[in-house]
Length: 500
Image (cartoon, rainbow, N blue to C red; front, side, top):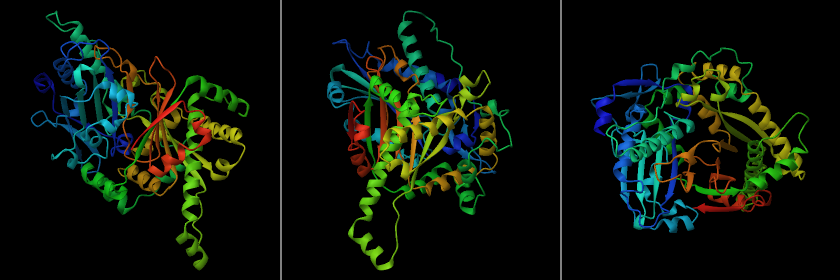
């Protein structure tokens, strides 16, 4: 830690519209490592001193993690790193009286994890840490009984990095740890070179006041602000997040992990491709988004119909002629990484937020129609169309829009909060989390943690030895029960587990 404190400089990191859109979230992941060499002690299997030293060395490339949120006079947020008063991330390393095999046999269920893990997955407020500042990073290393394995839990404020930046930090930490172990006999440590850009202005030239490339929903959700959106934008991150927490309430969500094999999803894609319009070639992601949209939308319909058929709603309609209609359609937000759309050659080194949802609307008539394969094809076509239209022109116009007013992100949040049937899908299956080798081999299993908001799906790749895809869904209990009963979806699922 001393080396980091001695080398860090005081500096401010202004946040932009992309950052503020997700500033009420953390990005939390679990990395599970099995000790496959019996008798290997901590001195040789992911040793504590090496992990700790490499962690603080990695912080030198990510000094923003030691900052604190602040708001300027224009209601813009920024992260301030004060060398004389650092807000250091949480880092703990401790033992655990559970054998790694117990967790592995339970499908790496998070039910067995300590409470402090789940607390670092929610909406960030100072009350979580009993401090005066929100911690921008939480890292827990837990060592299983009899040196059987290790789980590394990492949770970083989404306001400062997106998934791309998160995996960049984890892999930087790991490669430094591995390098330390490989060079223990050398007097000077030969660290691999790493370039990590935190400067939000690096793509500021990619900006345009035009709006012709933007979709109607993005424009509508960004329209005129109000006294409420301006008030919320002026609040500190902590106070605003406390407001959001009070609105969401204490609803506990369920985390469902579904595994789909590569042959199964490829075969299904080939079947659906037969119904595709000419010139449209579906990706695996198009099909997965269409499938989860169909499964969750059908579940929404059944839950709503069930509620309307209860005694009180039926009596209300009979007496007053009112009609609480069953939901008409579902809005699917597909999180798109904008880096590949920008021609700047250095954009690959940028670790701040540069992702934004692209939207598709699936009418309930389409969801409930019996022509399943044609309808899956129609939804997948919508996905392919909006993703193919996400080019540099779109990014430039979006960049200008998101940063045009300080409360744009609150306008969009308020707008979307009124959309009842919403699904968010993020695909990180091409990310490099199975390359995160701290010196004891790649992870046995990697999984995103329970999300703070319902109807959220994260698509991850399976372990390189197993292949396939793991789809981690955060759902309300009744929704989860409906999804696991959905024949269309479950016929493709190879295995699943549910964390209650």
